[in-house]
Structures are given as C-alpha cells and as structure tokens.
Amino acid sequence: MIVTRFAPSPTGYLHIGGLRTALYSYLWAKKNGGKFLLRIEDTDLKRNSLEAAKAIEEAFRWVGLKQDGDIYYQSKRMNVYKEHIQKLLNEGKAYYCYMSKDELDALREEQMKAKQRPRYDGRYRDFTGTPPSGVEPVVRIKTPISETITFSDGIKGEISVKTDEVMDDFIIARSDGTPTYNFVVAVDDHYMGITDVIRGDDHLSNTPKQIVVYKAFGWDLPKFYHVPMILNPQGKKLSKRDGAMDVMEYKKEGYLPEVLLNFLVRLGWSHGDQEIFTMDEMLEFFDPKDINKSASAYNAEKLLWLNAEFIKNMSYVRFEKELIYFGLDLKNVDKKEVLIDALRERAKTLKEFSQKAGAILERPASYEAKAVKKFLKANAKEVAKEFVNYLNGYKEDLDIPADYEKLIVGFLEQYNLKLKDIAQIIRIAIVGSAVSPSIYDIMCIIGKDELEIRVNNLIQFMEKRDEQN
Ligand code: GLU
Image (cartoon, rainbow, N blue to C red):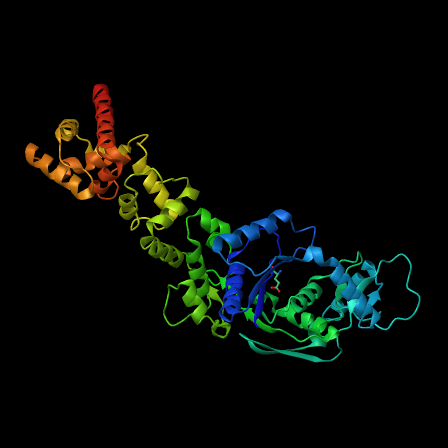
C-alpha cells in the first residue's frame, strides 16, 4: 500500500508551494487506494505556534484534502525520539560530543583559513576518556566514513553523494536533549509507514542525512520524489509580490478551492494540454513520475482565467453557499438566478461577484460624478419622470428580463424615444454608475417597486442638482 504524508512546519500559514506537494502526495496515495497522512512538524517550540498549526489545518479543510486518521504532532512524540536517540547511543551508533561553542568556532575558523569545508572533525567519535566538566553534550550520529550514499529519486533520477564531502557526524540531539530535524523526520516517516516521500527539492540536501538515520536503525528507505520549486515569471524565488503565499488569502480574494488545486496540479505536472481537471480526473491521470524536472513559473493571469471558467459553470446552489463568506446572503433574493446569470460571465472571482451583486441589490449611496455629467443631461429628469408614470400605469406581467424589455419597448414607443435616452438613466438609478449588466436583467433583479423607488431617488437627486445651478 502506498502511504504518503505532508509534513508542514507551523511557522506561519500554509504556503501554496506546500499545498502543491500536499496535493501531489494526496493524489498519489488516493489513486493507489493508499493513505495520505498529515504531520505537523512542531518540535521547534520557539518558532512554532499552536495558532499556526490551526491555520494550516483550516487551509486543509478549505481545499478539501482530508488526511487519513488523526493528525500527527511531533511535539507529542518527544519520548519516541528520546528512546531512539538512546538506542543509537547504546549501540555505539551515536555518541556524546562535548565540544564547546568556542571550540567549534575555533575549528571552523581554522578550516576556513585552510580553505576547507567547515565540518565537525569527529573528535569525540571514539572518545573513551573522562568528559570535560561543565559542558552539556550534544548527541552526534556516526555518519559512515568515505561512503557513497545513493538513492533513486522518482523525479531527479539517481543521486549519489560522498559522505565525506557533504556530511559530518551531524547532531541528532541538542544539549537540552531536543531532537533535531533530520532525525525526527526519518523516525516519523518510518513509524508512520511512509512508502513515498514527495516534497520540495529544497529538502534534497537533507535526504542523505535522513538516509544515514534510516541505515543506523536498519530500516528500509521510502521512495523519494523531490519536486522542483515554483518560481515567479522572472525565474526568481516566488515572493508575496508575485501573488498570495498564504492559501487562505486565495479564499479571501474569491478563488475557489478546486481552482487552486487545478492551478497547482498543472504547475509542474501535465496531462497533454488539459487545463481543467475534476478531482476524479486528477486521480486518474496523476503520476509523480510525470512531474517536470525543472522549476515551474507562477502565472497569476492563468489562475484568474481558471477561476473565471469555474465561476461561469458553477451551480446556483454553490453560488449561494460560497457567497455567504463574502457577506452576501441570497436566501431572500427573489431573482437570485437572474442575478447569478447576469454576473457569472463578468466576475472572475467571488469577491468581484459579491461586489457587483452588492451594487445591484443595495440602493446606491451616491451617483458616480462622471456618469452623471455625461448621461444625465437637461432632459433626463423629464424622461425619468415619464418612465415612472409609465411604470405606474403598466399592468402587464413583470417577471422575467424579457418582460422588462417589453416594458421598455412600450415606453419608448409611447414617448417616441430611443433606447439610449433611457438606458443609462436606469443604470445610474439602479447601480449608481453607467456600468452594469443588461438593464433588463438588473430591473428584473430588483423588481418593479424597487425600480420605481430608485428612479424616483435619482429624480430627486437631479432636482436638487438643478436647484443649485
Ligand atoms: N517540515 C518541512 C517543511 O515544512 C517538510 C519536511 C518534509 O517534507 O520532509 O518544509
């Protein structure tokens, strides 16, 4: 069975790069009927917070990648790590090192002067004497000397490193007894039964160290997949300037979770030219061996385009559900389907949708000066009054947008006017500006009574304006 995991360090929020590796891990496990586990790497008590862990869990809930079983917290597994450090000490595979900070600094300086790579020189590796007093020792693992560590990475191919060149006897427990990163990752991946480790290639240099830990315990290695980073369009490290980093920012900006997943799955992986995938299709087609070997570029326009595509096809029920987050409750909106259809092609995000919908559903607090100047000329007040009269006397059904179109046609005929004489008046009356969806749609959305109120409000506004002139 394939078991994968995502193992974020809760130092802040869930990063979109992290979400991408989480998605890959999720897809790979689920497609094979395996398990996807979530482990919060919160051993560094100074840098991690409970709040950050909660934020990561919230982001996971939003995107709907549900882990199997309970979440693992490294902070709750300290005893396991301590036991394993002791085991290696007992077996002579790890040892106490009593070097003081000053001694380490002096060693480093010497090595730098001699143009050597700074590394611990192994001076306590076979130490049997009396330890110096006053030094709380660290625990170092015995890294094999002059060995080549080779592993096959599912994306990068075969990777070989010489232990002497890239490693030393690295610390597995600090002087206060707390275990270090590479040690706990290996221990956890083993006990969680992880078969496939999919993670960012910024961790590539950690893998040989973790392999040293695996070998010290005689454990089988998982398969590794190191995924290239996401870069900005200029080929540099992605930063806040290039787009949001925090997954929950995308929610606030009005992106749909499945859009983010679609966008991320394609950043570094492809299935022909297909851009839009259902979860079932992602599960069917995804294979980590098809992940690109080179870094991929973040493309904000593409994300926006994808979101717009999904919004165009979204169900009414889903709209109603999603818009609540943006403070828009459509429960009592009579013509919500007309509203949704009028705006779904015009809004690329739910945030934009809710702003545009709000502009129709709420009476305008003011009228845009430019539109007033351009469209509300001297005769506009008269036209608006004639329209209110006509509306008052209108006895036909006003139910769907086409009914309002008939109303307008009748009005224009009776007063011998053109559509342009009334269209912008109606727009400004309803939304406060000259930009809106079709006037028949927006009239229908607010209904006959509200239409009359809004046109009357605009008439009052024009009257005041004309008095002042
Ligand atoms: N905790 C690490 C991180 O947040 C990931 C460790 C791993 O995937 O092995 O980058």
